[in-house]
Length: 296
View 1: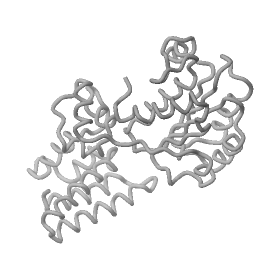
View 2 (view 1 turned 90 degrees about the vertical axis):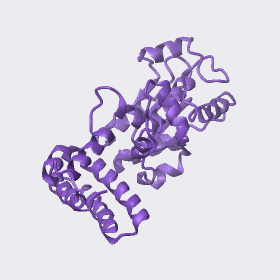
View 3 (view 1 turned 30 degrees about the horizontal axis):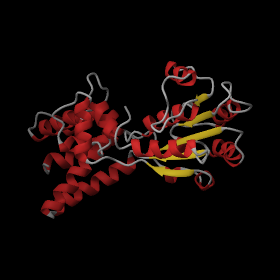
């Protein structure tokens, strides 16, 4: 079932599709975990459906059944790792050439569109300007400003809203995740799917609960800044983000110069961690050392 905070957008797109006024290039922008991929998948299924209802796809026609089986011939999605290169984009565009195999529409989804190289973006421009018949492109991004202005100007832009705190808690409870605290929601930027992924059994990465326990061990001298940094180096960016948020909140409460310096140290570390090849353990050790003498 489509989550409540995404449903209004899906219904709006569905109405426009039925009126034949849906823009051929939609840019869905929202933070990671907001649900933009869920929305894009539901919208793609609706665009391809042969019996679209007021609520979206029918779920029963040949197109819907093929989509659910994962082998719809007119649905294509690019795979983005660190970058989307020109060959991948050209390959996706090539699949849109000609008529739809099921005689309806064609859809190309481009996740992490902000990772397209300049050459890839330029290769996409012609299709954005002159799309083939019955073709729809769904571009997804968490960093809208990283896209070329020429791409932005040719897409219809839609921001994915974040639900209210209680809405997220209720939705997570429906997924079997109870006892979710406001602090956990805040730690993940209130992004529902990010919170869900972190709470699921066997989830990879450092959980917020694990972070809180580690900081408690640091304050209780059970861990040193160095030992904790070595354990957390693969999650350094997230750890620094959480530390900065905690330090900023403490500074707002205390207005103490030490708390301001701790927050500033996190900002500097965050910038350093953006550079490839840096020693994350060393940077994180320096940050944790500040917090070991100035507890949160």
